[in-house]
Length: 192
Length: 185
Figure 1 (cartoon, one colour):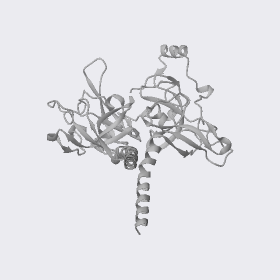
Figure 2 (cartoon, rainbow over the protein chains, first blue to last red):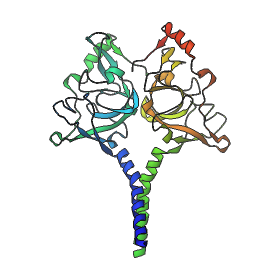
Figure 3 (spheres, chains in turn orange, brown):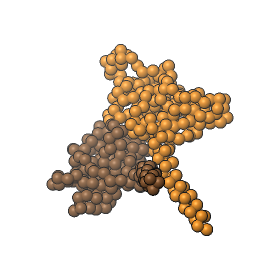
Figure 4 (cartoon, each protein chain N blue to C red):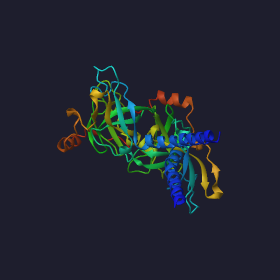
């Protein structure tokens, strides 16, 4: 009887301690998550697979909100804070980014140039036309970033470390082009 | 020797366990913080005091990002995510705000956003400067002033009389005139 009670007490305290230890680990180190949706195709959830990718989300690497161009990050959606979205970082504060948007009611796309305000960044899904991203909601507060996707863990054939990488057509504009655009008054500086 | 080692081991495990337990408490329940600056005067840090107010920040109440008009909240600044600012919630998504010094006079707050202001008009960097703010930046609700003791109080949601929501008739009228700006998000 005594031994059983002691066992139960040890078990219960172990169990209770495991909760804050686990929570702290998930919040400060990282965890694993399944990617939903097609906005990051073909990099994540490519169409020929029937399973969704599972990625490792590194919380520690974004604890100071330091992200790099080309990183794949998870963030709270600016449209709904309870929804998490996964996108690629295209531009950081101070950058001039080409914003591609569709003229309403048509199939034509137009370009304009936006200066990313301080405390913000510009994110896009790799799957152009199938992603709700900065092209729709503009620069996003960096404070919404949640984690950096560091690895694809599943399926095993797609196991890889995720390196920061920008699509060739989304590289930063060179300074000459930026100066030229500014002279033309073509760069929009959103107020924040 | 044996007793000392056992004591040390118990102490060490207690110490190590305390870290995640405390961190989880601070992150999910709340903690105490000193208010810096004058942007919420006269409600917080009124000028006649030499000490800064200390408030209780309730993290649990914002875990689902549900805030109310009139709440005093702490949030990450849209201009610098590492900086925490404390402001009053003036309007929620879908509301129409009559702004004070913003580039547009009337703004429809987009979904997923809210409008915050410091009580000290003219001495606050808030939505009047940076526009509607993503609700995802909210960190905690200030539930009590804890210090100094004379100012101990529960903080109730309350809007200044000149910052109340516009009535529907006024909003309809403004919309007819095309005076309401709907930021794209």
